[in-house]
Length: 411
Image (cartoon, rainbow, N blue to C red):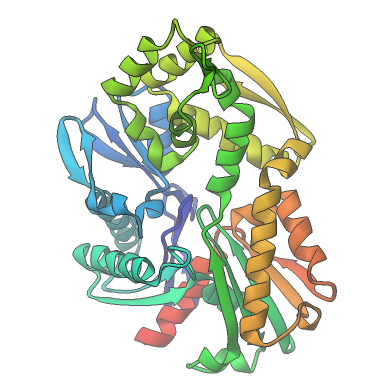
């Protein structure tokens, strides 16, 4: 069972002894969905190893949030890797092949059968693009040597994992908030039902929305980092605003590499004497010339995670010299508030699809790293007055559930 996530990936293995997550990097069963093309050693490095090499200053190209290109036009584009154009689907394929070969090394045998997780919606309100995204993912998996590929919705997989802990029947809402998508399922679960091969009748409703942790990162970055790079600067006597795409792309993991082109740097230098804050535009130029975009994104992500547990954190913006800005938990609450409302609306859509009310839900199973964000958690739980909150393995529940599903489908 392969959970290819926007931020992290897991791979669950099923055997006669049950299911377990495979260690993918050292002893860790999670692998950040990142690939770093190391120009010094001429090799691809994955996960924490790749991110660490990039942050330490190794010359190369870092790519994260690879899943985000599925369902978008970017999947058909190529990206420049040390003077060579590489198709985006091939980059995703390299990452998936690394997961596969790592697991095969642990098992000592080839893996040809896989259940891939998918969000309820790859693309909101576009069924054709959504279907293309699923087809692309299946095609990429087959190109890496998976001969038999099945799909399962990620919240359904999480439901299968949660069900193993139950002693009685429950009407549960599964809330899976990942890096790129938020997915929901209403399911009737019980120890007895868990033994059935076909569970389609127990999944009463599902919904999803293209909101996740990378969106929270982007909003936090726009509000608290981009002003230091000229986001609010004005150009010329007409006081025209700075082109916003610089800042929105710089705050979006998979868009960052598109900024590192000479045309952008030349444009910014050409307007230096027309803007009211040339010092800030100089700092933006520094970010692009020295390719510091992913370092900024990593610092914002680290601050977001810390603010889920701490009232205040220092966010270092990696300029020369470093700029330190203080963030409070209220800043994170404000940044994610509108997304939290959209998540609750998607939950309502799931409840309507299931033909139940918020008051009918007995338990809410929370999985995915973004369920740790306090404002998101508050909004979700306050909407379900009778539900007992249950926190699962934030990063492993889906992978385990996919492996359970694989056992049933391929045994």
